[in-house]
Length: 230
Image (tube, rainbow, N blue to C red; front, side, top):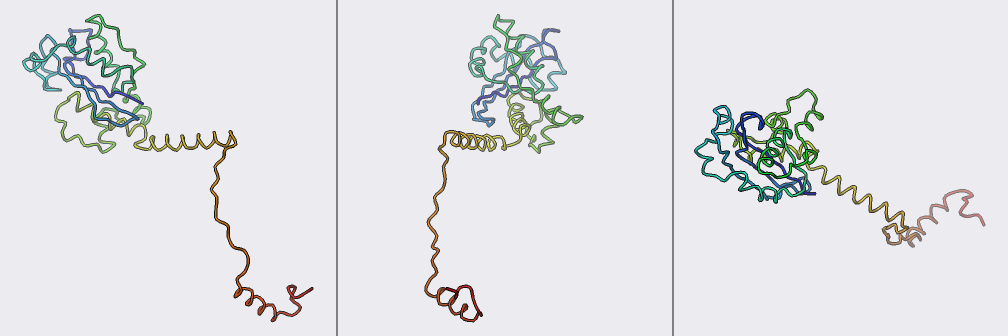
């Protein structure tokens, strides 16, 4: 099963107000919930200034981003990487809204919202009343965030991949799937009449000469032993 962990950095909080844009996209490929090492990462020129409050979050300046391609120049590579697979996103509404706004600007179809697995909502359901930010979940699961001095799309996607694995039960799901597959195969064999049985070697049942002699000596000491009756 292929999934894509996705994170973005932006110039603000709402793509429909103030002309806010995506400035970084980071994606990691998961197969059966585990990272494969395949990734997509790009900084993007938002073709606008960088508000100070956003710069304090991710540290990406207008001068730095001006040297990078626009979303339109990287969109084909991005869409090819994510394919049609599920997207694992923390606070999916935010990132999906920004990505779809970028797609709309260049006349591309929006990504369906139901493609996204929202890890924030997963955490809220699993730990009601507890903090569900990425930082809080990393602390809960003892995931090392020492390299994270500022937000970064690829680094956050890497952390999120670890958080997602914990939210779905750590490494147990793989074991459960394997056990389930074995149980299903066994059930199918039973239904088809092809139940596999292990064959044991025959066990000896006759007494040895020494055992027979010891038994006879014991019987001789017993009055009217049943073994001596005709």
